[in-house]
Length: 128
Image 1 (cartoon, rainbow, N blue to C red):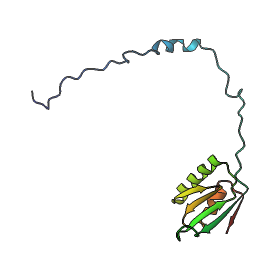
Image 2: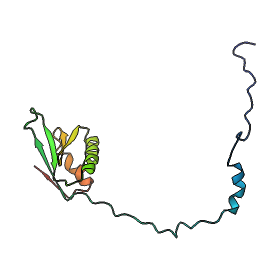
Image 3: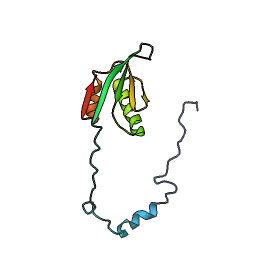
Image 4: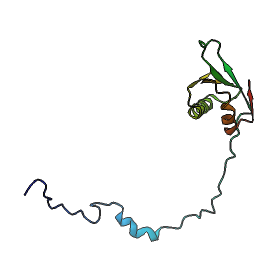
């Protein structure tokens, strides 16, 4: 016999060696009938509205001549600002940071940003 000859492989058992739930399958018919899906009322939350307005402007001062786009007047809570910044950075493919109450995105994004903000629920976007 060479190394390449197949040895007799052990046959796996048809059922698992130890199934702790096997005895429960027979008792499935004894279970009480649960409430129907129609009896439970479905409560839907209204879709949260976005901020009323946003001001988008480009800035160079104090940044070593680099262009950044600043989004102001969103009036979002701090954790929500982080979520919005991450979504905008992913959509635009740029870097960014939260500075105080405003979002600062790298580069001149004034043309692309208003449509993204409106898609997120901002009712009025002012580009300056």
